[in-house]
Length: 453
Image (tube, rainbow, N blue to C red; front, side, top):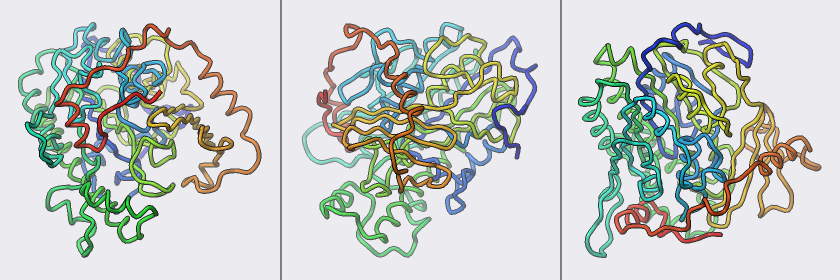
């Protein structure tokens, strides 16, 4: 394993400039925390596919989502901009009209672009189909008003990977960009056998990970017993392992064709994490603590990235679009995201950012966060003062530092907030949500989106 800092060299550049651009497979796991992956230090969880990718590629230990819910975060991943710039901030908000996406840029460079997604929050309704030649949304309307189980509307990672394998079988003649977005381990935490009992086989209680049992815990109005939380985490980890198995199937398909394996970059990440009462609640979209925005990021490229490299610089999901565009031979435009290809290859013509930024404006939760190598500042409208944490001494963010917030961190947040924002007329008004999308969102616990601001 090679550990890389800001100035270390981890590979040569020669392969980066070959004339034929690489294929690109971007695999996103909804709601996967950084610490739910074995190679990120959790020895109790099995994620052999991600572990293998980390050994064959580059693993980032300090990758951060720019928001703690799907649409805002994925908007940043695909545009290289912060949520307040790309526009998909709250429940009714689509991507801003005219915003440039990674798919749009790669298609302009001759790529065949496709997306297979299992979360309606990043569906065509909200503008995420822009730039994709094919956009497959794996959720279906349900007739009538009777209660349905989420799996009747939302596709598991197995079904998503089935479609991705089928697509790969027919679409490898030209350079391609394929986005695969899987929903597990998003709540409800109901992995199939044997993953449902893999990490807590002796549990005898009534919490089964379904929304019914989750609502029952919420009705208690307090932190559930530690035994119940431990079981929910076991179910969540079971879903993470189930998802990893599906990623493994996809990698097997990819790598069974040596030509395809030798010409395809694979990037794996998550849109955000999940809280299990570390700060008093469960779910996501309400805070910017580590459990919600610290996410896994692994990139394997047969051309330029040294296998087993570990990068400890702080990076963000907004960096992915400019990085992949650069590796495709393009020139990233200026924006929030930084091109990491130099960092990954050792040339570092563009130094990595010294800090990363996240923001939230959802269901009344309004927060900003700045993360540096060792410190973190959270500005929460619901708190009387900003919270500062030393992440080296207090990685769980349980003990805010006393005194005033560091001025340099406050200044950095203010500088980001003061940057040019899109004119008001470029921000789309709240949109009509089709019935099929509304039902799928309800199946995930979101309910019908309503204006928040």
